[in-house]
Amino acid sequence: MYFLLLLPALTRRLVILTEADMYDRCMQEVSEGRVPSEIRFALVELPPDLQEALSKAQKAASDEVTPR
Image (cartoon, rainbow, N blue to C red; front, top):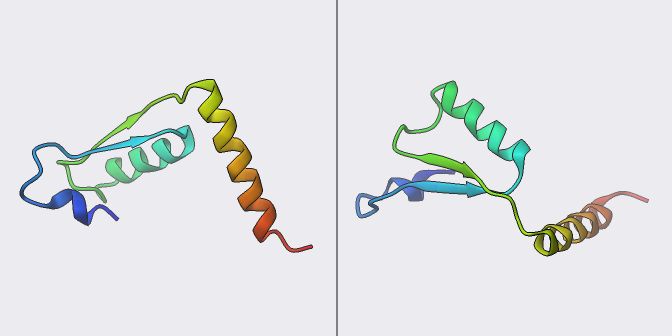
């Protein structure tokens, strides 16, 4: 997953996440030594309007794959 972040031409290797559960998962991977030390993770909060749009899109995607 992180292989593109290891390109030698990169000066910074940063993954910005907007969901706390994914950030926690990535930090767990870091603490267990599964992520190269050059890669950093940041958690940012989306503005309310973008968060609402994301939640709607996630629900639509979930509904789409949920068996009926």
